[in-house]
Image 1 (tube, each protein chain N blue to C red):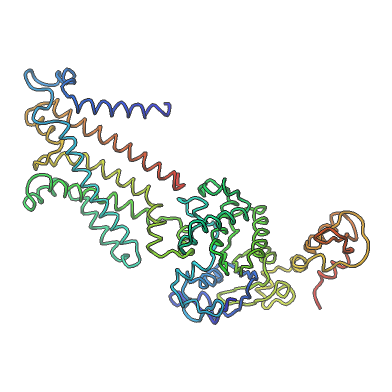
Image 2: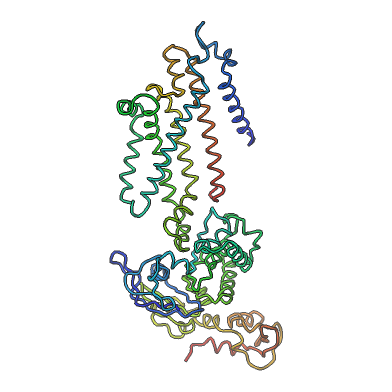
Length: 247
Length: 312
């Protein structure tokens, strides 16, 4: 396959997604065969576009928070004074990952109520691990000679962190964010069980009214978003890696 | 001048550097040799306090090196290591500008310094300045590493096996360059190596380390003539002794009045090279010329052989 074929396919997928979100009605004939007569083929209890944007917003906020906390935590435990917290923070973050998001939702609702908040908490906890582990791996596997040179040229610990360690770790950190985003995009759909405005609404509506077309369009939009964002972040990662000479 | 005064380093009760005292004269090249684990790297890393000494003191031009924070001390001392340690995310120019940048030099002064150093190391500033380290060859990376160490015009340059990763041809060139640079800036160089040929080629004085102690510290010739311990003798090598002596003396020193046939040899070449020339060309004598090319007499096979014999 030629190198430009995947790029064209991605462009086509993006166009298709935008077209569907802006004017879902024009796709009705395609989905009509999937539903029983007289049932709507296109989600009709809200705008797909605004649901998609809200879905993305939820994922963005949760991932941003997870990134900030995970990166800070990883920086902290790789400093000399934080080394003893390494094991503790590892297990904390691991618990966040092993705890099922549904259970987090169930526990969070009594505390913060229905809506976006419990979803954000679940996504945040779920997104921590990949970013934390990747940042930790990056910071602890920097080339020894480079770190030695940074110390030898008289950089203070803070200067080493900002001028050398973080820039060199960036590609691996971005890889962690990428994993976390894709997990969150899929997981966010269950937020609709506690009344968060996400694309899960479309899927749940489809399940309740036995409408395969609803389930399909909700699932496909989430899938398309995940593929596009994954590829986009991969490209960013490759670009940074090229600049740092790692590629 | 670097005064190392009864310095000791222990890690968890294991003594790595054991009560070492030595004085390193300004504007000289001192080479520290020894087997791996002899403490030679730890010794020079205590000079710029990458390693903190357990006991003893090191003074630079009379000033204790603990009189300022470690990072400030290190900005004043050049440091070049094996595998160069260039920052892969910064261009060659940015790498060289590291220490001047930390010292807060003005942009124009930094740029001028970077250009001067690149030119000095035979790297065209316009071509190489904007490149990233991974776009350079091993020899070029090594030169940039040394240029970076010299950027803030330090009086002292510490080098930890700087040429260890280079192939023999590039290494020989890098050694020549280093000697030229040392003359140019008058830098005091302390270099660690386990390559005895390199040590004899570069050193004004050699310090031999064995199990954390400096067992002998003196000019190369002294090490050959009067090795202090069997370890020094082994390090120099029985079969190498006459050639080591010849390798550190200039041909000019063995010249005598007279004529000789054939290709001349410059007086600054080592007597070892003169001997090689004599053997290879099958002659008994070579004409010697000065650096400017004027005749200085001849050097004979006999004279060279006498100089290679055990001193009495």
